[in-house]
Image 1: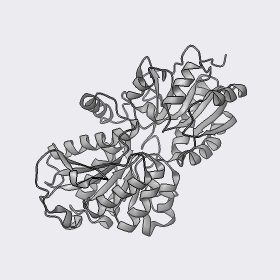
Image 2: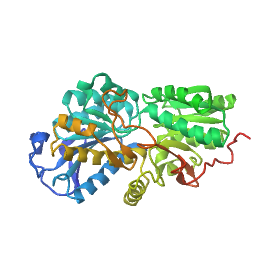
Image 3: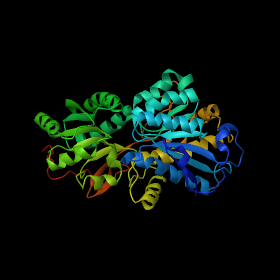
Image 4: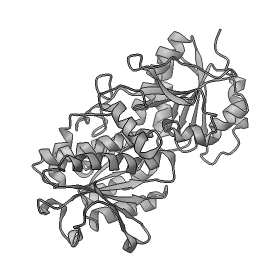
Length: 422
């Protein structure tokens, strides 16, 4: 069992050791790169634990740490997690990162699925020369900063799909399923107004016409929206065959109202909250038929690790992992492997070199980071032989993989109120 410290941003003196062995006295004053061989390796975790996606981050990290420690740790050293909740605040996220780097003396930080938080932390990763990897934020700017100013920003890695690749994956799936199989021809893009959706929508507008879907309208709504009736009325007036979504923070409200108002147009694209089984409960089943692009689903046999991890996660926590539960689990293993390949060192510059050489088979596929010359420097590479991405759909209360066809366990089905092209 790994040791985990859950730390409050406001009351650090009340840290509570939740599991594992003792032995941390005095570690805060010892530089991470020169700790004794037997002392734990600390990994910081920053998450929005009150949200469906954010809650999966520490859970995925804990599972990986437990596995690594049960197998003997990293060169005999145990992985120890230090966890902060940023309460969906960029200010608190930065404060947590500073504390992890300067006070807790962690070797690396995995944190946040929110792009605004990740982008606020990124400059501090540069200033403090601390490895930082986001497991779920998507904004293209995260990796763009590394590309544009590598010498300063090289300590940041993008451990999830960029918005560009999410749009490309969702559009590839739309071509194969919606256009080729269901003969759809048009769509409306509907996204929340957030940092990650600006590049997502730009890429949607690039890729969807190439996939065979004419974009009839492009709607960006405030995350504070409580009544989607005017938006759905506007969409119905355009008579599209499908709604292409970009939703991460507000998935419950539009989904419930889509079902209540019996909007006759299917929803496809990205709905991050729909990646965990708690979404079924939170929407009271209104998510039936909702499809979302993601990294993996409970039945996605992407690698030999994917389904066993999902089953173990569900057994431990009672729910399926949200998308960043998969990525965080993989990232803890990737960091541990990088430390091993760096000769056991947690020196940040050595870890940058080791992480750049990553070639890891994780739950999401074969994971490699784009190089210094690529526009998406330090982001995960996207592709059918790397991290392929999948589309899962809620069917009869369960998440089913419907794309790509080599991983699909079900065909697309929509509720009876949805009208498909004849």
